[in-house]
Image (cartoon, rainbow, N blue to C red; front, side, top):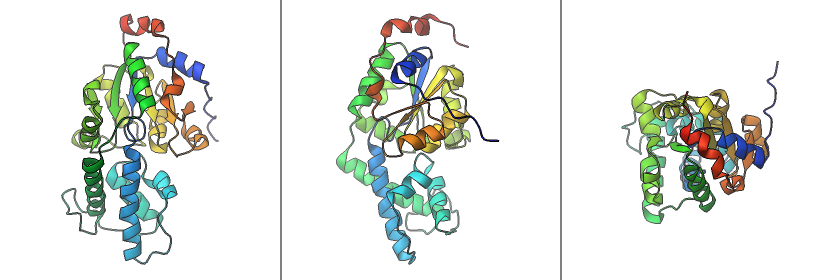
Length: 267
């Protein structure tokens, strides 16, 4: 038996639902900042070179990024992509040098490219996402960042928005707490717990299939997809209740409706 399709919301319906909830949990790369583009370029450089060195005929493409890597913890992304090409490597350890031909070594090689690019070029938040962040915080709604990346802290600092979030759950926190990464809802559920809330009181905002699935499977109060290339139909199929190209499509928010958020009791 197949599950019933998720009802698709209009922007006004999504705004009303959002304002009935207590917190917005943001993915980072591709939702708040365009660092997904930097990640995509780093992955493409890694796997295009690696496949050529292995004489693999099927080239790496952006479709591989969205299908196997996007939104997942780094080593899970390496493992998933390699499996798509029937390549099995030793797991290695997170301390592996980037030159080592292990899952962790390749993941660390990609991270070296990413951090070099971030340090050189910097990053700025999406203007529409910043307007949306301003609106939800003005409405008394709590906010958190939930990212699979181990680079969330430097990215938030580089974007100048680290001080906007009291709760940041990233790949380092997940590893320290033993939390399974997306598409498991564990990191999102933990962020809700850190805010003193239940998943049903929170909105998940994601641009990746794996993150949308996490919101759906975690039974969160609202799952918003942001289409930065994954595809509207595909994000809806993964469990998003509304998909926008930019978060400011959900504006304006009626701040007066937020009184129940700031004065109501939490579950």
